[in-house]
Image: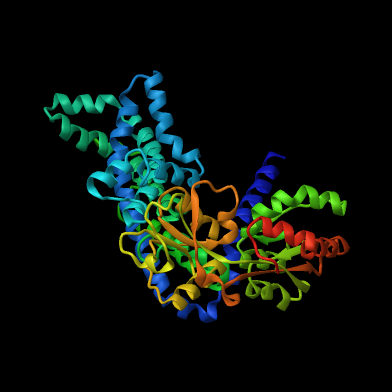
Length: 267
Length: 219
């Protein structure tokens, strides 16, 4: 009985996840695919998507690593819980709301954006930097969550051993702590990047949609759906292929299989 | 009733009275015109379809998903700025100013197609900071203060928008540049009789008065 229920659930899950993929592939305009793939629209939005999602991933690591480290080291008091809630908020916030929140902070009339505008004449909305910010905002929690669990799992005795062996604090952190947490950190990088690549709501709200500047691939798909559904399907397939390719590449190149049990680094 | 998103406010406000008159319960679903038209073609449970352009309606009529149509209203383009017009934008020509942030609808959707035609007719070259997917998103950018101006519909500035103002746009007084709202009964709908009565109500003088009060033009 138990085995039957598992099998039933498995079939349902596979169908649920697989059928939309099949739908995309069946409805794809294969005959006109080469024209659609050679279009300037695709090249522009794909390049922009790669630039913004990769920049957002780098930012998520730069901002997320200290945050994750602080969460690991802090006592589990109200301060830590508040910080954790803040770090994870973009995960539960609808991205469109995130976009509005970004506007209210960094927009021309926003808390900080107003100062940026009057002091430096800098405005982030409608810029590629704004699209990167939107993607970072939604991707950051995914990295923090993964990094936090990875860093927490590092046995303090290894860090202590490094200290006894005379390794300086920074080097110890880099060569022991980060090295041991690498599988989890890598997994965090990958999910953060995937989230950034697929980002739509916060971007369209905060950064708008201009070809070559802020219209990333998901935005191009959404717009094309209005009047050129074939182009939308073609763009979606490209987005799908890029994600699969990059994930496969990352996995082979420098992911020490994040899903496998952690290796013992001192061996 | 599946309708173009620019009708959302007027139809939502109107619904209780329409329901009382027709003795049926109305459910409304909004989206950009080509999207709602395609939903009806793909078999969405609709009885009435109203789009903001004839081109989108053709998607449904060519698939024989919608019967005869009647135009229920028109909408004229409007130059929308922040309330009080802080940037002193007096005409559409000024949208070419380098110091302005202008958002437009993308030419793929009706409001963008009409706006592009208007700008071409006026001979104005605009460098928009964003090309939005629907008219509400374009107006929202101005409302939030992020953009200085956009070209939307008269009905967008007409009601309840205290953060917005309209600049006179004589160039828009041209039948060719007006949005047209055709309505039709969905052929596979389950309430075709009620749908027909609903459309008759929308095109009646009483219905036209409601549209005009909401900033639309009479059909």
